[in-house]
Length: 99
Image (cartoon, rainbow, N blue to C red; front, side, top):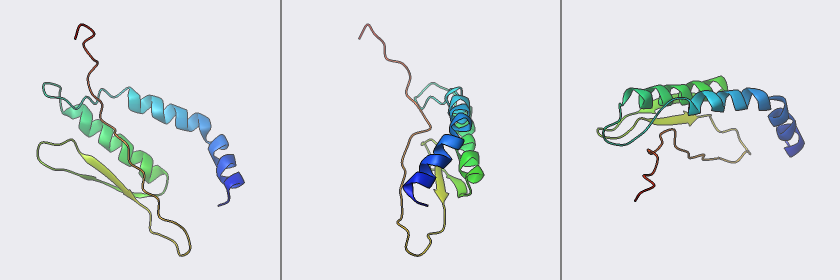
């Protein structure tokens, strides 16, 4: 896919992408002691679903004491580069302004 095709695809799917991001930020996925873990699971599952919708293989990886990791994979095609995208689906609680 050349740059103009990629930009056209981004423009075509912009509204859908914004709605997907709105849905993700509504999940209170706070990764901090004292906050419930269920929203972290929900956030991870939502991210994996978005990757699958985009045509990638997606799974959750779990390590004791850590939020679930979401891993997406698309088999590499000959002649195309490998891209690694890293982001957080979990968030930190708001700062205490008094401190």
